[in-house]
Length: 315
Ligand code: SER
Image 1 (cartoon, helix red, strand yellow):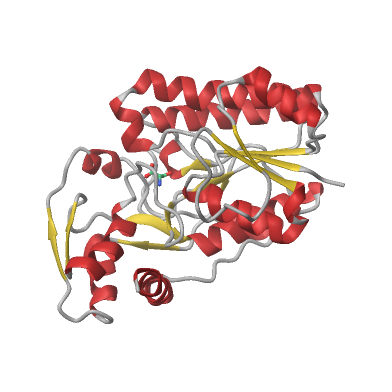
Image 2 (cartoon, helix red, strand yellow; image 1 turned 45 degrees about the vertical axis):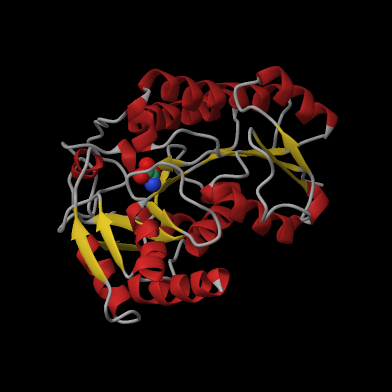
C-alpha cells in the first residue's frame, strides 16, 4: 500500500494537494509536513508533523519509521521572495531536492513529485506558445534552481531509475490557501481586494500577459500525472501545462462583470522585470498527448468560482 509524505503541505499548493490525496488514498496514508504550524484547513483531516525540508536526517528517519513510499516535495522559495535572498533561495530549493532524491534512491521509493515552473524560461525563450523544449535562460534564482532541479530529476531517473515526475506550473490562483511570494500573486490578491475595497492596485502593468491556472486544474493535473502508467511519462524534465493566459486589465474586466464598480490601477514594482522575462502563453501538447492533460477552467469560469467561494468565506 502506498504511503505518501508531503513536504511543504501548508503552502499554496500543499494544502489543496494534501486534501485531494487524502480523499484518494485515505487520511492515514497521507502524512502532511511543513516547517510551520499546521494550516487550519488541514487540522483534523489526517496526520501532521513539523519538519524542516533542509533536515535530511529527520526526513530520512521519518520515511523509514512511517514506511513512506512516495514523497511530494513542495517546499520552495518562489520568484519574488527568492530575489530578496538569492543564496538562501538556491540553498533551500536545491538542497531539499537533492536530499529527497537521495532518500528516494536509498529507500527505493516508488514515486517522487517535485514542481517546476514557467520561471525556467527567460528573455531568449519564444514568448508565445512556448514549446516543451526550447531555449531556456532563466534570470531569477528561482528559475535557475527550478531548471537545475529538472536536470537533476532527469539525471536520477536515468542513472538510478528513480520515478520522479514534475510539472511546470503557470501562475496558480486559489481561494483556499494563500500564495507564497510569487510574481503571479497579483491574480489572487485582486479578487480579495475587489471584495474588500472594490479596487486594486496591480504590481504588474497593463498588458502583462502571463500563463495562469486555477488551483482545481493544477491539483487534478498533478494527481493525473502521478497516477499515469509509467510508460506514458515520456519526459523526465518537467511537463509544460497550461490553461489560460491574461493581462491584469482582462482579469479586472472579468471581475467587473460581477462587481460593476470595480476599479484597477497600476503601480509596477520589481516584479514587473521578472514577469517581462516569462512566457505569455505555453504549448502543452506533450502533456495532453502523453498522459491526457486537459484544463477545465478559463478566466470567466474561474472568476465566478473564486468570487463565489471568497464571498462565502468572508460571510
Ligand atoms: N507563481 C510562481 C511565481 O510567481 C511561478 O512559478 O513565482
